Structures are given as structure tokens and as C-alpha cells.
Image (cartoon, rainbow, N blue to C red; front, side, top):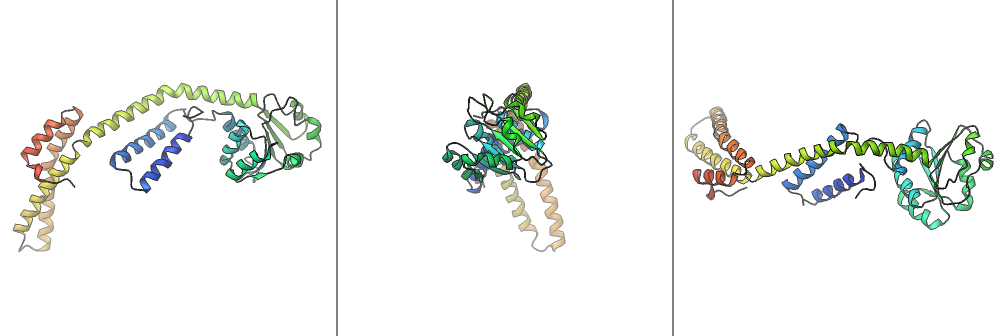
Length: 312
């Protein structure tokens, strides 16, 4: 279950699982069709609804904010302070900032090291946090303290060449709001970001009825195809039966015929075979949709003596 409405993680997990099955030749025609129906439905939802628009989680909204505010910075330097639940989510979402140089620090260093190893980030010892803050373009703070951790007095000591973006995801706040008085400092707190995420969530929830309509369409289309699948072995047998007759007759009468004539006759007989096949195939598929396929299959099997034909 996704923690966030419209989260892309689950569809990505399904894609990876399907790819693994396909690589091991464990996916047959039914599974292939089912998975491609899922992927096509997902694409329609993205294109036709607001179900995937914006960021609906606090951590991803913070990443979107950082991305937009650092778009003109080459390899922005980001420091993440605190890897609790929210901090860990933010760290994992940093994959959406592929050019960023990310450092993380935490009072319990082993937690920072575990996430850094997984994500390929650099760990800063907690006692060196102040130096790392001065170097960073972006500081994301997600720690639990009763008093602000980053104060105006502390930030005033930093040499700020162009800007310093501070993102406070802590409750209560861990960055003094007055830091914004310092030239070059931009502060966003959890309320700003949560508000943005909430607006997105409302839009996504409003899109749910349309999403459900699209899913219903896809389910109907898939089950229509599944019904027709019942007739596939019979259609294949009928094709094989007619092709066998065609080949046998060609072999009987083409012994003294030149290549050019053979090519013309081959083309004519194939065309005739397709026309003969058309009506029973259309009728059989129509019977499938009416849930009357079994009777039609039996009639066609008896008419063309298909029981002797093995399905390929």
C-alpha cells in the first residue's frame, strides 16, 4: 500500500517484478497482456487526470522545492541534518536530484551511515555539523529539539556567496524564523511545504472518480480480450486445417509449374483461405462476447473435423 495517494512506487515495483518474470521466461500471453493493460492504464491516468500532478508527500514536496530553487546551481551542495522518519524519506527522495552533492549527519552516526551506504551519500560527524552548514547551499533540518538548532546568530557567521536555502521539516521548528533577515537566506518551514502537499493531495483525491472510470474501461477491455482467448485454440486449429489442405493441393498440382506461376497461385490461395476464415472467426469472437463460445466452438470443430488437429 502506498503511503501517498498517487505514489509511483507501487507501479515501479510491479514493472520490476514483471521484468524479472519476463527475463526468466515465466510470463505467458495472459500475463503479458495483463501487464501491458496495467501500464497503458497508468499512462492514461497520468495524461488524462491530475492524479500524479505535483508532490503529495511532505518529503517529496521538499525535494521539488529544492529542485526548483537550485535549478541554476551546478551540483548544489545539500546537507541533511537528522535521519528520523521524515529525514529518511527525504534522503531516499534525493534520487530525484541526481546532480546534487549530498551530505548527511545525525546525532546517532550509525543511522546516518546506514542510509549513506544505501544512497551513496557522504556522512558528516555530528560535531562537524557547523562547518558542513557553512559549506552547503541547502540545509534540510529534521530533528527533534525543544529549542531552535539553527539560530540567526549562527547563520550570521556564515559567508554566503550567493544564497543559502534553509528547509525546516521539524516540529517544533528547529530553525529560527528570523534567519530570513540575513541577506541571501531563504527559509521554508514545514507549514509552507505541508500546505503545498495538501493542495496537491486534494487535487489528486478529486481526480479519483476519473481514475476509477479509466480503470473500469481497461478492466472491461481486458475481460473482452480474455473471453476471446477461449476461442484462440479453435481459430488456430481452423487455420492449420485450411493451410494443410492448401499445401496438399498446391503440392499435387504444382509439379510442372514454374516459380512465377507458383508465386501467383500461392498468393491467390492464401487470399481465398483468409476470406473463408473471416466469417467463422468473426462469428466465434462475437459468440465469446455473448458468453456462447462453447456451442460455436463445438459446431466449428465438428464442421471442419478439428479434433484431429493439434494446437501449436
